[in-house]
Length: 226
Image (cartoon, rainbow, N blue to C red; front, side, top):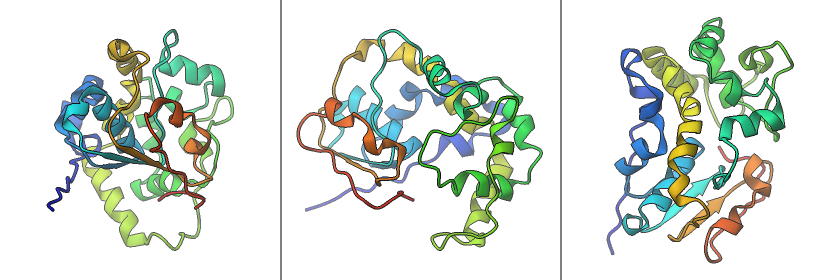
């Protein structure tokens, strides 16, 4: 029996600063590049939608940490998030071109990595009124056992080469995705799928089971997935 393993080239961190538009980060632009894989976080979102768009090309999919969020028939994604979590959430703050770039530029790349990669909050993060999310997030003084300073530097160096605009454009494309997903309104994921989440992950209490056919959703009591 033969197996294929796919290594995904990360568009978010690799596109040069001078060639970045949010349209290039929509699900329709990214998902067709893939054939099937294990996806975590942003990669899980792409995998969910690859499975939705082209179930004929997916043998199976494993999503880690991030559940499937079906399209609202009436409300765009960013405004829905803003109504629930306010103007201080990262999704809303990342919408205005240049705003997050300026805020992040106040920190070195290693500090930004520590602030975001080492988050242990179990709820959706929102900064107080008038504060940028990057300023609100604490900088851990001690690294957890699962990552080293050298490994953090790898991530920091990658973003130092590309900048953060590509990562922000993933969020800036959310409303574009909402518009383009209209033909799949109400559709379910039909390919063999496993969703794995720790019991401290935001997605643990999601309604993913309602939108994936069959008994294919697995939850683990492992706190967070890293």
